[in-house]
Image (cartoon, rainbow, N blue to C red; front, side, top):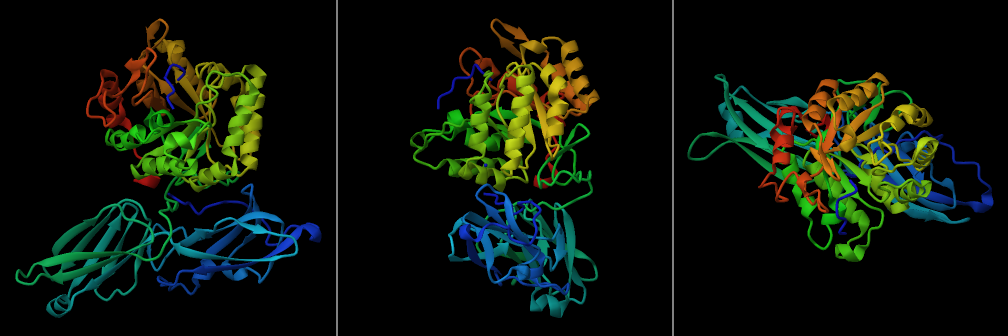
Length: 558
């Protein structure tokens, strides 16, 4: 959106994918060093009854400074006493092989080390302590329950499954660490039930549930003692449900595209329904206006937010907060509100020079930024650049090279590419979109068209959207308004909404708030907290094809 006044992604996901031999690279000895790596598992939670040790259920990757897998081990026990590596900076990543959504004795462990250096002819000793990544639940019954009743059990249900804790059950249950837990205890031959809910369950957390009789009243009660089992970060654990199979060529752990559609990590089709939110311009100077608005955006049923950002971050404008801290805060807050984040770089808006895209790619692949991007591979989409407008073969070749460079750096996410011509010339997508997809080894590209004054007729809207479907080019309407231009012309936005619903195409309205320069009418709300909604906002939120009537939350964040 070019006319907006410019005034100024911790889910540590453990899935860093890559294929590698267990042999170290054949590099001349003169430039090699050695690593003594000790990967341990926090032993505060070790219930495993499947005959395997926890060490066998954790894979270990050693990544170089570019995020590429230098060496990989199928289990902790497979790690040799010494590992020969080329000199350089490395990071160790451990992750669980378990794909369990719910289950008894199915803990999932993992972790990521700090960066460390390998020096010539030197031995470097490093340790990584893996922590619990899912939620642990135990159920106990008081002596009064045991003595007074012969029949009792407790069902503990998450968004992904249910476990029944019979009266003699001593095992712990493990749940994917997102959403709520509903506890229903059934006591006695008459089936008396009592229910309790644990909201917003967390990883690395033990919930000790006790079923007892309240003194003085004789009522059956449920008490829950919450404790953090070990350190670690709040991680999304992506595990499969019934959904579309990920193509063999796509080795990402995040979203993927297939046959013109976008799928979440569980293989469930995801149709974006959301808004744009101008974080880079309104979260500086200690304001956090866009950041705090995310809860209101969620409350109005959005399932995705396009996060406006730029490469020219200056910490002095952000109370000296490091950019990576700010990015994690923004992405984490979006996820915590149950919405899929799509980050976009606004620097190259309307530009036509290849160097502008090169600079943005350099930003994404800068080690500190790359680390943040990789942390959120499971949930983040990356919109390379807003409305870059290279023409013809320059558009094709520039984006082909950009995709190649991003993939070589280890960015496996769904990459979103705007149409040329300030996002409105979708013909470039039709002409070159398949070429760009074919150049991507992951075939994981989502195109975005911005529908403003170039789409002032219903016919032009339908023609563009139907053509994308016909060509099986994955598409989202990344921006649109109800009028735009100078002079402003009306845009049949209701037709955009209804056609997107008919064709199962995602859309993201421009924009929550902060418009200026004569397009203030595109604000969806008058107040950042959503307490006052404009007519444009009412149409987008409560209209017949608006957010409240069409948006469905992504399966991995329900």
